[in-house]
Image (cartoon, rainbow, N blue to C red):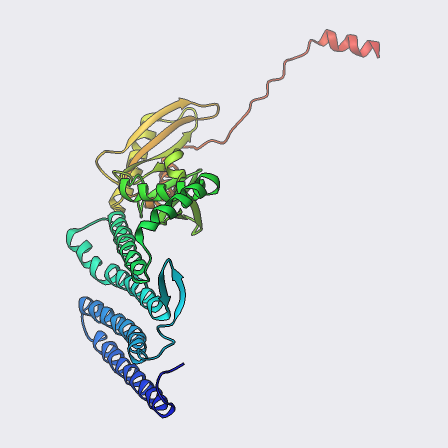
Amino acid sequence: MLDIPGPLWVASISTYFIWVMIILIARWIFVLFFKRESSKKSNRKTRVYQMLHSLVNWLSLYGILVFTLFHFRSTGWMFQSVFNIGSEPVSIFLLVIAFLIISLTNRISLLVRSYLFPGVYQRYELDQGIQFTLDKAFHYLIMIIAIMISLSTVGFELSALTVFAGIVGVGLGFGMQNIASNFISGIILLFERPIKVGDRVVVDEIIGDVERINMRATVIKTLDNEHIIVPNSYFLEEHVVNRSYSDKVIRLVIPVGVAYGSDVPLVRKVLLQAAEQEAADSPTVKIEPAPFVNFKEFGDSSLNFELFVWISDPEHMIRIRSNLNFRIDAIFRENSIEIPFPQRDLHVRSIDHKIIKELSGKE
């Protein structure tokens, strides 16, 4: 297994474990230092220390792996062929190198997206949807490059990918249309952005906020804190209401019915008063466009009105609607305006007394 004598093998193993212990002790000292310093600094410096903390952890792990490869470079098993790709032998050494390239690239992508990009996003005031798109695009690009380098490292000819692509194409034609459709739809969603992370959407009459756009499906968090997994192709094939597409400002409609005989101008006045009071207490309610009262119709049991109020964020729609209903009920009571319940009048026709007598006589 080894090309060195037994005593030298024991010494080699001992040296290996000593250096591994040194790496672990150095990591432990750095981690303690970063924890102590991050507790005393500002938020910005804390983020830097957290990044360095993660970097030290990763360097420790990959440092041990790289040191293992370097230390045992003179052994036969490290370079022994495991299998062949064409005429090129693939050894354990090459497989570990390929794994290190892909794994380290993934770690670097996570580090950049977690600690470097947020500062850029904050500086240029990019919205949440653009941030998500840039994160995904950067991650996919850097991982594709890492995979191509890894394949070249183990001796895989990239020209053979054309054959693989043909095989995958046949597979897509028979059983992977749905997966391919959702994957391509996810890419379109990321770049065309008909929906983006943070948008409030209505899917099959269910209201929720877009949390993540993954490769196959989009995760939507409902107002009840439930999560809906929606295939990406749905957003390109079906009608989807996006309340945050270009402008978050939406119109909130409050239907109100009052009894027949009510003072209609007074009803209009107090409804606008309720909207003005809510606008004074909640910055979400906009003054421009101004609230408007619509006399909708003469209903079966009531005069039906609609109070139109514009709000700047659809996430507050339920709260604002509830607040306005409370205010309208209170202000109607103060002004003796009645909110009726459905009524039905029963009219009984009088019966001729002669008919009653005739019926009685027959009996």
